[in-house]
Image (cartoon, rainbow, N blue to C red):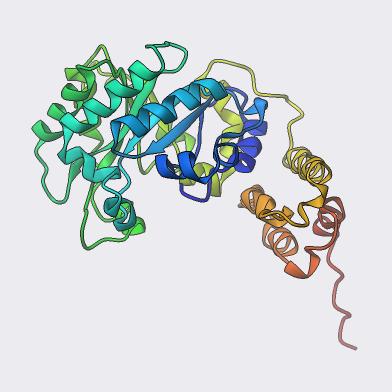
Length: 337
């Protein structure tokens, strides 16, 4: 979710679900240490619970970033061992780390030690079920076992292999087959661990199905699911999560898409006032609003609504004015005589 789940996107998603755990985009240790800590680590307090997702392979650097995450108040630090992009591989982290389970264990141990084993800041790992076209269950089982031995208790498992050569990141999310049974088998073999399934979950029904005991293996129930692109492209599914997955009432019976849109507009205008309109900054309001463009997906008028919000000729208007324009009824063409 690089360049997607920034702090503005997470603020939007939090409006839809107060209880879902939100994850940052993967941030490299080098970017945090050398690129400006506040730029990458700052977030809105309303985002809690929020996890910092890290990319890196140097134990000392990861430990430093884990300590910073603790100081910033993050609720989890996640080490990404699942991203297959060649750019990430050149940095010697992401999915290629699954070939070096001992190094991952050293990284995780350094991070745990850095936060003093604080249970309020668990160190977790996100990974694939295999590398390239190998389908040996023993490979992922041994990876999880090695990392768990140093104190990692939470594993977020993308239920596809990562092909390190020949496929783009997009193709890596589509071509390697989904094998949910591998994730369920991990839970069977490691019942003491928290096993979360990721990959291919297109809607809430699919997520619920994977959380049922015996969904794949008799008597085995996973501990959670992680949803990425479906949550981004069809964000309204988050509005049902608190009731479906957390046993909590929905945020409000009166929650509407337009109310959420209005809250995001108010948020953007507050940020504009706080930073003097972002006139000289790196962010413009349309770079924030891009995160909400799936809000009305599937509803009549959604296409025109997106077109108005995406119209760059309106970028100098206030967001509240653009919202008004987006909800105006289009004028009908005059009928032919």
